[in-house]
Length: 518
Image (cartoon, rainbow, N blue to C red; front, side, top):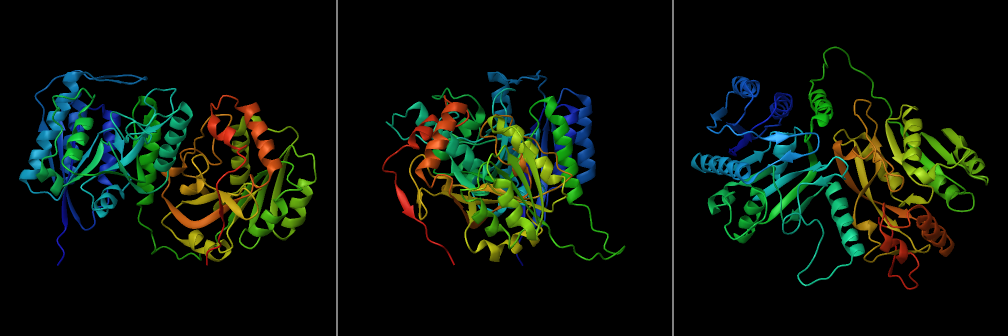
């Protein structure tokens, strides 16, 4: 008989009641199959109501230890940020070290240290254990300042360097930006990746605990924060650090994040409601796949070929014609006459403010009550076997979002691959199951806002090995047209990468021949 893994879920808690209640609610819904899960909280609360919540959780779960802290420090936070000082940092480090000692004494297989302002998907703990890593964190994203972009809590080097840099390597600003974007893109795609630093939502194996990992200050380092000292010590012990990105935790960093936290908890509770199968048996409905697309002056490009490639598997289509002056709409009507379609015409193009255009595309598409949305551009075609394999993706019940690799073709038969053109190294979303119980938000930038809402990866998601062929760069005239457009709309590379814009004009790019897969 296989022994169940014993896991200790632990957290030092100094938290306001509204946030702590959501944190504890998400812990209640953790999947615990094939595991024995206990909880350990160090109650460092100023707020009596927060302490009461821990006691109530203890009564509800049973296998919970609540240890009261002797400290009475004031920890400040506001709508901007959290205010830490050296004393608070190393106080928390001492708390975590005492938890480590307890986990070692009780011989737990794993210790899961998680901050009390994080909300977890039910699958998080069991999934992390399945990875069989000594140290692995679940990713979460935070705007450390209100007007900044979201960043993950993991990094590659030093204190918080989030791009690859080898010793002695001198990088230009453009190279740094390109590598930073590569890292951020990777963290948005489901997978398990080795990193240099992590924290706040970390599973630690018994092996790592026995080797001596801890959060104590390393005297000859000035790096800020106990997590950095933990990570450096672990690396020096020969322990690798990993991050999982399948089930991103929800971080309530500011009070304005509480509402979305409430929605997150409601969503996971709804997912776990038992099915009342004794009331009625329904006949499964056919899954409806809706093609969603924006077009502009595509008549003499790839529009007809692209639409015909989609016909075998789509049920209907929603087309936004963004100010075409050619016969693009007539091409759509002719090719799509065998399926239901809806065409919306913008007299004036909205592409100079792309987020407005993408929001319009999304709203018009969801108004047709789709089951699944396939969001493709007019110069993108799936490889031949997509027609054969798509039904498996549409009929499974585990995932609501699929990401695919996109290959930038530089002519009809070859795609480009170099430092700036490596989109096929990463997975990006094209196919989503529409859920009316999910609150969608957008990246509010006029360019490079994404074709889907920016929080789409909070849905259960996976990747597919099916590939997308992108012909938007496949002719010199197309490349010149895009180059001029980027220089006009984003001359300083504020929303993209200036180096990549300039590389469009390379005369001898590295090209690789495309091979269809069986």
